Length: 348
Image (tube, one colour):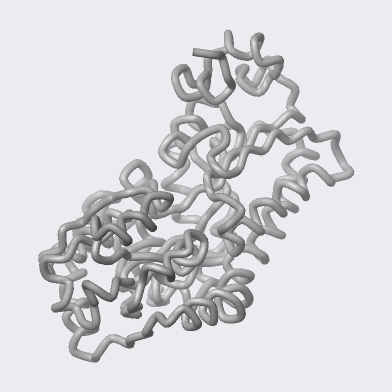
């Protein structure tokens, strides 16, 4: 097997031997590499316009910063690390920062579940200020992340429009009862747990394989954000969008806490300025510009029928999600969990 940077990161994350072969210092320990050389990763491809725009802009602002000579090696589209490899890569110090979908890593970082909880995501979507940098909820999240030596630079300006239940013509989901016996593509743990009440066979498959899975009937439906639908052209295989806010997420920039704390002042300023721009241009850009003006018109033009949930279905779902909340609170601790929920709901 030929030696590539990606193979070295995948099979021996943090291995300093690979750095000599690759001619880069970004795999070395922090003390052995130049402080102004940074490696960043993201697995989303450019076809996801709404959620690749701000990470690209963040990186460009680091590169353009005039107060320090910063070199950024940035690998989007999973060029260096796949989605499931990014967090291990960050923890091993093989990369300096990453952009990550919060719903993908709640099993490893439970506190991020507050951005994905059914019954919470809709409220956070309507009130992005509750996740703003410096807000009580943002600070609480980072207090918990610090225990795992992680730091979230910002929460992307809020969560994205919630994920809904999208289904094919052959297996329509027009109401919650239609879910029974269906094979549903779900990624987030919280959404999977919420849908268990309805006899769903949850299937976790990469978004890159979802088009064929829908086409072949491997899955009947999926819980998707509209970025996934349009980014993978899934509207060509879908016929219905049942707009029940099932789960949600944001994409946030993360670093190791001790790496952040040890940054030189000018470098930290560069990150803070890029981070501020990112918060203004991630969720706001997707939610307020791309989705209403480009994505929803494209979905409707493809003939996808949009279905609003009934009051009865909303009440049923709200009852079904209570065990999800209770499970999450147990994971993060009673005091932290209850306070986070209250902050998200605007009750504290």
